[in-house]
Image (cartoon, rainbow, N blue to C red; front, side, top):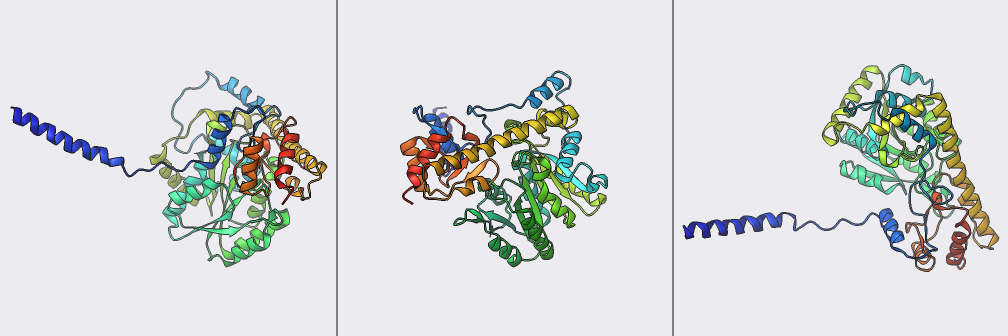
Length: 420
């Protein structure tokens, strides 16, 4: 009896050590650079601290905002609906209204049912679904991603096992678009490559092609037989006009491209935590659209099965009601105008301080982010000496700039850049 007990203990010890070794090789993941900025900001006790790293809208008091149209939509849907699953493709009404924003209210492509579209987990989820679709049905292809881009783009296509290449986009000397480099890279990419494009308010640079440049980009991509995939995270939030912000999409549609689009309501409706987005793909005909949608749903099934319902109801309620949609358009313009105003104020403050540098790029760029041109060392000085927090690439979230801190921010930037 004692021998049996001893044998069991020995076996338990062996099995226990085996189980304990399962995860010994796991190392801590590197910290997300943006989340790390927020953590450091929160830990700083200084009353003068400023966070211009966060990628979420703030009002002029630095506070998070919930739009009036969102609150009214919540009141209308509260208690009126059950909590049943949505279909794998999401809310049909929400998807329909979302397509109108991207393709146009009276789009022939919508009428002809040539668009395969599913509700996605915000823009990130839409990009990931597309990346997996690309890998499954065009496994030989690679994706060209701009330099720089939103850092998560690389993670998304990497984890979908899609080979990545880059194309030139930002010109550090001019702090504007490297159009010559961009054109060369489109021409030199193998025919039939995939190109990731930011539809508006390029993240992180805030640098967008002009309308004429978009037309040239569209022409070249069509000549090379490339597939354009648009990440449109800021429609309406960039200029204050959703139609204007969709101009690049419309140019490509007019030129006869088949395209893919990732849309998000995180920024333009402030639904960050609701994860409401859409993935759409314009196909050759209705039959192809049906097939593509069915495959997108099959990709979603093992990932998350069904998208969440609450955010989708908010979006469909707002866009499906003319009164609420008008209010939304007014509010999204208000957010865009505040950011544009802060760009002007920051530039004017820097110029009044006698900065020897040109700060025209602050107002030439558009959207939530300003690519300041500051070096990592200068950003470190801003943090260490002035308690100002941003990512080390010099990206300023203009949503974090207010009338109350713009003077302090400008003075600090001047101090760390005046000897450049």
